[in-house]
Length: 281
Image (cartoon, helix red, strand yellow):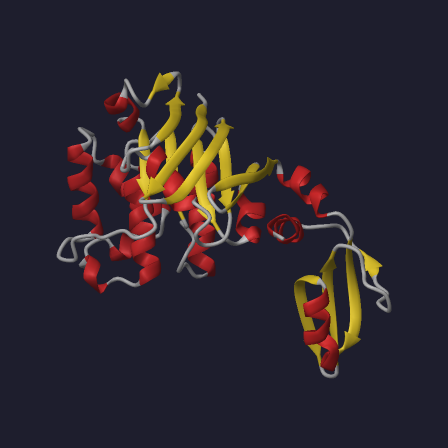
């Protein structure tokens, strides 16, 4: 079960949202990592068949999107970045309604998803009375209906508190043991915590891909440097800084790349965030 994308392109007017995107993703979790406007949402919309592509090809499980659209749609689940739900419905009624549209005769899975995502106590509350994080979990539940073999999630962790994040991470790891899962994020720590493969996007193209370890190796030299707090702003203008920890009159900076003259630091193992900053630069 493999998702294959070859030379994908998408334009909005004269603006290229995606160009020359190719990728292959198997069972497990793949993260699409990039800043806002890098093409992550556009790529997921094309993979979810909710927007037409302008060039290239996509296949999943040996089925070409161009010739087997309905069969592909029957195997996928999708959580868009902005999900509009009917506010007068409850999570339970919404999931049961969507299950009927998907011809899922057994309603047991709707109850299982409500339980797995911590929504049981909210199941009969109107959607327009739920918080952003609660609505995000309802959106994830609808994407998981029918155990899709291809699961596409656009910023699934946005708006979740610590407990909600743990519930979602646990459920996604479970699902990914038998499915292809792609999720987008602009936060490197999310990709590092969840994904086995990472694709880094910039300006509509993939600029790097590989395992977390392979990408971390591309960060190069990373150091921790202790300086006076008053010198932080000036140092950040000269260096790529992935983290700053301030304490009274001192600060510890995590610097990616060679240290400029006059700075001394301690080498540290690179993280995905370090590599991400180096690649985006």
